[in-house]
Image (tube, rainbow, N blue to C red):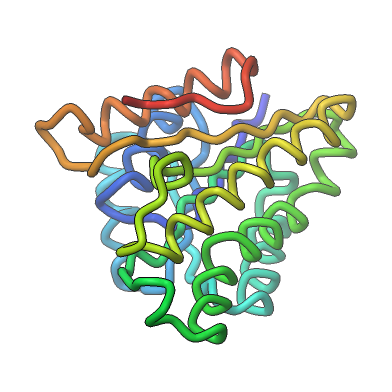
Amino acid sequence: MDKKTIVVVGAGKGMGNHIAEEFGRNDFRVVLMSRNQASLDGYVKEFTDKGMEAYGFAADASNTDSLTATFNKVKEQFGAVDVLVYNTCILEGGKPSELSSAELMRHYQVDVASALHSVLQVLPGMKEQKSGTILFTGGGLAIYPMPEYTCVSIDKAALKALAVTLNTELKDNGIFTGIVTIMGNIAPGTDYDPADIAKEYWRHYTERKDVEIIFK
């Protein structure tokens, strides 16, 4: 039986690669997406050196055409995507009175709208096979918004709402949507070690229970 495929949009040394590795250790084919192909090539080598099947595809989460083209390449090469993880967010500060509407929308495109766009790229295949998992990386600012991080606060709240509504709509199709809400700053060797948090994504995938897991 062919391996299942996980696509992680927002690959990197923070959460993205740790999530991918958690699934790779469980015999998933790992597809990493981020803007920089050179970085992706390095990540792929790290995964293959650990005996995992991994691939890197450059895509710009601020550009839906870029995402569409890249997802089409992935589907042409591997078929339907079994798990999608959207792990991209613009982590910039800014108080509400200091933001323009254009700046807010720039953040929203990457943090939320492109998450939905990515879902729409994999959804037909998931519906056809009547199975699939969609997971988002949430944040504590959705629950406790801060004026210093207005865009992140707004967008993480919106991303949670997207997860809930998608799960309600798609569950009868055998598709589970969830979000892992991380309540602190991610850093190795701390209570928010990305390797530990990544295990919650795997638990979400295997248990398929509540839409939200809160990592405190």
